Length: 163
Image 1 (cartoon, helix red, strand yellow):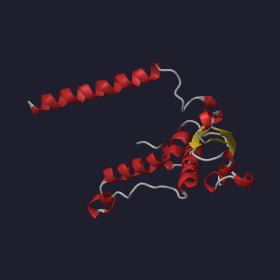
Image 2 (cartoon, one colour; image 1 turned 180 degrees about the horizontal axis):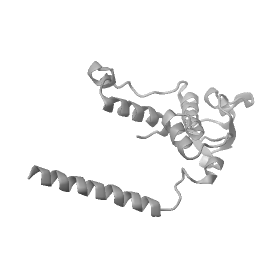
Image 3 (cartoon, rainbow, N blue to C red; image 1 turned 30 degrees about the horizontal axis):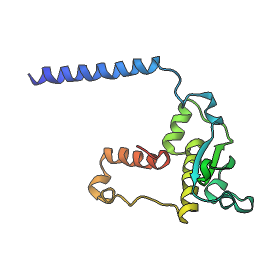
Image 4 (cartoon, rainbow, N blue to C red; image 1 turned 45 degrees about the horizontal axis):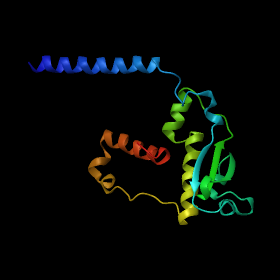
């Protein structure tokens, strides 16, 4: 009886995976595969005057360290300043893009993280970080394979702002 249940569950799971894969093939191009992706601006709205974002024409440190194009504009409705940035270097494609994203070396991810850090620095004076996860320090967790997967997802979520 157990074998029948396990077989049915396995078959249903395989069917769901195949159905999702087929549905994904029918969809339009994803933003990651879009060739215009590298031309798109990423932006943050900073709660300060336009003159305070780049005093004397100098960019804040996280953005100054990257090879990016930057645009600074007054936010609509007198709500601060909008800081736009996009990478100048070409975007990796295919497997190289996947590997760059996993390693945290993708140019768009680096610009996104730098914009978030600049906003934090200007508004608060420091780069805000979440409290450390105390469960990550437990020695029993260090040898488990799932711990590595969770650690990788947590590292990536800092750049993407989500898991």
